[in-house]
Image 1 (cartoon, rainbow, N blue to C red):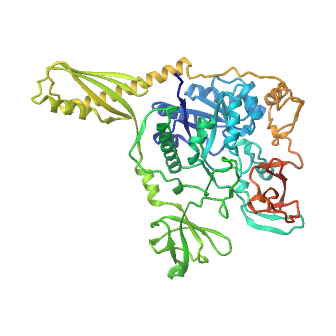
Image 2: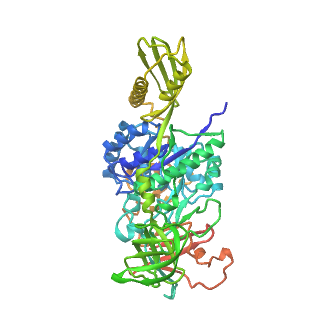
Image 3: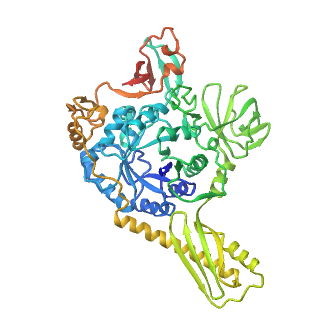
Length: 620
C-alpha cells in the first residue's frame, strides 16, 4: 500500500503571539528566529518564547523550525552553535540555514533545511545540497513548474516553495545592493529594501527614460490557483513569506491557504495533512484585504507577465473606487465623488496618486456609496484609482472572530447502573479514560437518556471536539447533565496531560531527530575546479574549507568581507526592458542607447541584459 504524501502549510512567526495565531488558523508548521542570525534582524525572539511556541504548537502536531539563515563570521560560529543546541532542547524540528560553514560546525542532530538564500535554481545546485545532507531544499521563487519537476526528478529530498508574500527582485542570497549603499547586508538580515526605492532610468546619453519610479518593486506572490500543480510537480511544503508581517495578515493568509489545501487534499487520496485539528467557525479569509502590492504568479507557468508593483511600492491593497471629481469643503477637508466597486466604511485607510505622481494615503472620515470625505485636499484627475489598504471592519473581525482549531476525539461510552466508563481516542492516536461510579437510577425513557448522554458528551472542551457513541450493558442509567459535563472536562484535561507526556518523551528520547551526519561528497559539480567569487557567500573558515573539500580551486571572501570595486549587485529574472515593452526577444527592434542606468540620490547603477539566460544584472 502506497503511503499518502504529506502537504505542509508553513507559516511565518514574527513572535510568540503571531506563531500561536498562525497555529490557531491551521498552520502545519512554523518558522521563527531565535535571538540572532535570522534573515530579518527585526524579528528576533528569546529562546523562552520559542520553547513556549513549540509547546503550544505541539498540541496540534504543528512543528516549529528555527531559522539560522544569515551568513556568519568566524567569531559568530560558536554563538550559532549554542542557539542551534538550544533550539534542539526547545523541541524545534529543524534548522533552516544559509551558511554552508555550519555543516562543519558542532551542530545538534536536527535536520537541516537549505534556505532559499542558498540560491537553489538548478538541478546541479539542488543535487550538491542534497549530497551535503540537507533534508529539505527551499527553492528559488523564480522557478517554473517545469523546473521544479526537473529538480524533483533528480533528487529525493523534500522540496519547499514560497506560495505567498513579498518578492525580492534579486535572486535570494545574491543581492548586495543594500550592503553597497548602506553597509547593511541582506545576507545578514539587515536589508534596507533598496528595491522599493524610486529611481530615474537613464540611457547612455543621460536622457531620462523613466522618472522617479519604483522600477525594481515587484508585486506580491500569490500561487493559490497553483496548489494542485505544485503538489504534482513534487512540492511538499507550501511556504508563506512574512516574518515582519502583523498578526492580522498572518491570520488572514494562513486561513486562506488552509482552506485551499484542505479542499485539495479532500479531493485527492494521494495526499494528506501532517498536523491535526480542523477549523470551526470564525472569519472568512480575504487575501486582498490585508497588506499587498497587487498579486502576481511570477514565472510559475513559465511565462512573463506584469510583475512590477506600479507606482506604489508599499501596500496598495484592493481597488475600491475611481474618482469622479474632488469638491473642497470647509476646514481643509474634501469630498471625493466616486464610482465605487466595494463598500467603503468610515475609518478605512485609502491611497491614490495625485496629478504630480505623489502617492498619498489617508483615512476616510465619512463614507457613502457615492462619495468619501477626507482630511486633505488632493489634486486628483477624473478616473484616478482609489485603493483600500486598511479595512477597518475586516481588521476588527480578524481580531474578534477567530476560528477554533479542534481535534476530533471518538468517545466510546459504556453505561450501566453502577458506572459510566468513557474511553477516548483522538485523531492523532492519544488515548484517555474516565470513569464515574455510583448507584444510578434506571432512566424512565432509555432512548431519551441515551440521547442526552450523546448530546452532552459530543461537544467541544478545550481543543477537543468529542463525538460519543453509547453502549449500554443493562438498563440505561439516568445521569445528571452536570455529571456528564464534568466527565467531558475531565477527559479534555487527561488528553492534554497525555499529549504533554508524549511530547516530553519525544524530546527526551531524541526521536525528534530525523537526520544529521551530513555527508560531504568531493569533486561534485558545479564546484569542482572552479575559482569561486564573492557570490559563494563564504564568510568564515568553515565555509571556505567546505568549498575546497568540494574541489574549488580558490574561494574569494564574501562581499561583506572583501567587496570588489565594481560588482554584480543583483541578478534578476525580472527585466526592465520587458516591462517597458523593449525586449528584443519579444520583437522590439528600436534603438535603446545602452548601457542604461538606475539613478537614485546621486548613485548610478549600470544595467546589463543577459538575454541568453533571460536575466537582468545590476552593477555598481
